[in-house]
Length: 318
Image 1 (cartoon, rainbow, N blue to C red):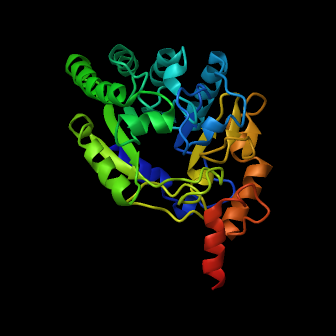
Image 2 (cartoon, rainbow, N blue to C red; image 1 turned 45 degrees about the vertical axis):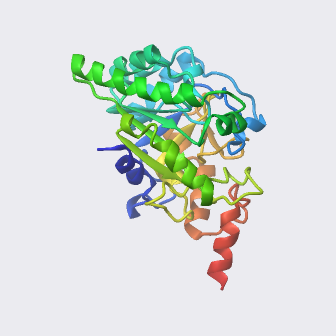
């Protein structure tokens, strides 16, 4: 199964999961670090809205094992930060894959620190999917967007990742998918992006486009989409939001969030330092939020400020 098939399976909201207390999610993303080496204008991480630190490795081990015992099958070893900054990334992947037995361990990176030997180590540790976020048309735009000169570095790292993947697969039989995603713009910028994608297309198994998210209404002043509508080509209606029903999100300090873009902690539904995963997954706060999504009335919810919801409410009343 390729990455887009997996994404589409998670962003779909089947009838049996559209309930206030759904069963254990198949997928969870766990934030090994909230730190990031980029300061992208389209990501609210650059605004320093919360403390940014690393997850205690013992906390990671306890949560990862508990979630696997509960039935989680796919573990993303990232959330809002850049996991290649985490000193125990290789250990975390090995623990998840070989000691907990997750069938699928995946990681998204901005790519700057994903150098050849580090990629080799994470793949040899058991990583099943490595996806690069590639969102700039040239070196100058990359520097303008991220505040880092990283364009050629990322391209070279993607190329090297493919080489390493093929070498590890030939030696061990373990195959890690190499993927890339990009924000889909419009007009001249999109044409430039399509030319840039040609530089990495030979080295990835799949490339796909994403909308420019409003990140829980924290990104304003530009054309953005509300909620998390998935990928271009399989967009989902933002209400009810699939993220509250089908995938867990754990912050570096052990909070369970209902949102893919919880840069402020306003979507915290439970605390895994003092609660079990399933207790937090179906906490009273989480059940109330899901009921609001199912009723399509988010006016009194943490999701009320998402700009797209206003447009949807206008459509419904028209």
